[in-house]
Image (cartoon, rainbow, N blue to C red; front, side):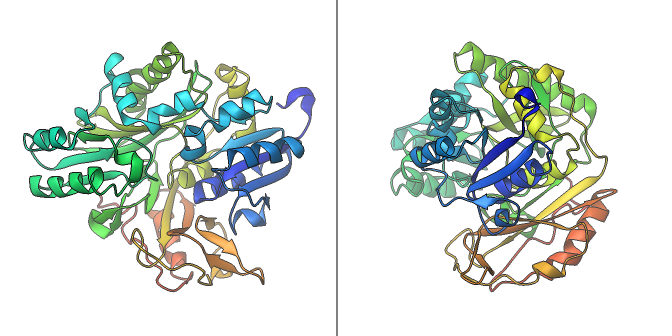
Length: 429
């Protein structure tokens, strides 16, 4: 509980659907009297006060939070975390939820994450890192396709290429290291083993010592049905995975998440916040694809609606180092979320297009905004590649899925597209 039982002024940093979902959940806490989002979007504007400061503007956010008496700041995206926003807020005496820049390296540098996993025997995909194009090319020629290539640094969720042939891996490597399609993030490249199995996202909240699991989810990275087309930031997700068991969760926590948290502490970089494990499950054996230093998007949009516990209480316990006193309560309902994207995404797309139909949806349908903004007349306009995540709860995945697809076609903007196979029960994942 807030110190002395007082109520809180909260700031959520970010502008995506993940941040809208965080704001939506935090707003439900009786402890919250004022809620702000920086910079927010058209969705957060309905439940919070948007502040026109970019998530990357650490100086601006720090000054604004101090001047406006913010009691707690929750950081959504990885960029400001890697840039040290938590370090800056802490140094100014402000409470902030998220890892330090040193701890955020588990996402910001795949080389750092790989070394950490190797030191602590965390099961993961076999990989090798290169800052020499020729050395990387020679290594690629010795691999069996499909071949996974990853930019070492942050690339907005798009720094991964799965090449089905050696020739396509050569092309991708040249684009990353010579053409610098991912900028400085691709200065160093990781060539990784392609894992087979079922992909699963697993999140834990941690105070640097206690590891508190949430519920798992599955997401869809490819832009088109059937997992076709280029990778995106995520086109939809669902929770829980049908193949998930408590035994699998225990195995993931004991062999992956706890060793990672303890390893970061041993390295002098204790992690406070939400740690994401992108996993591949093969014959009940989990291996790490990647770690992220924050909640995932679009998984957050299907995890938080299932959480019954006050998220503010959980965050405060993590910041106070008493997470061992917390038990999370979850609904037994399943949750499905489908992303509506701009025409052309993940390539070039138009913005400023009117969004209609948001007021025609059935009760219980949740719409988390991402790439939206308010127009001069208060109308909702598109402002990004991924525009909305349409979400529903149901007694099972089939019911939740049917609710989403019965409503999503009522929402319209020029060029809108979405996958029609999210949480399809024929999906073997």
